[in-house]
Image (tube, rainbow, N blue to C red; front, side, top):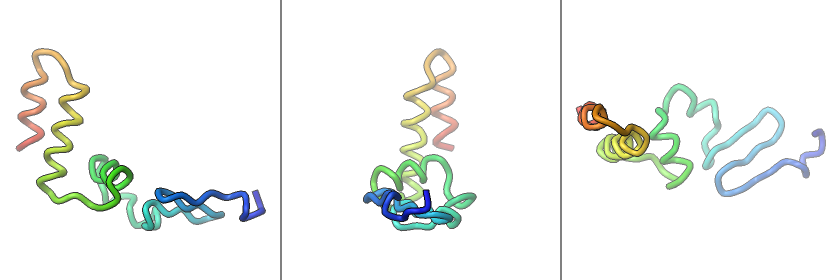
Length: 80
């Protein structure tokens, strides 16, 4: 699309040709600097979590998808 009017801007993303911003942060400043839990937190909560919140969120995500006898050990490792 060459017409900039066709590009989208929301509270979460702002995209134009050769430029993507996520919650106001250029995507190239996030890639390689945020892990999966931090990125999801940024997209949903609009801010960066504290290290304690990252550990808690990571444990919650793992426990939500990891079921069975090994689930306890997975959650335990997430806290370490």
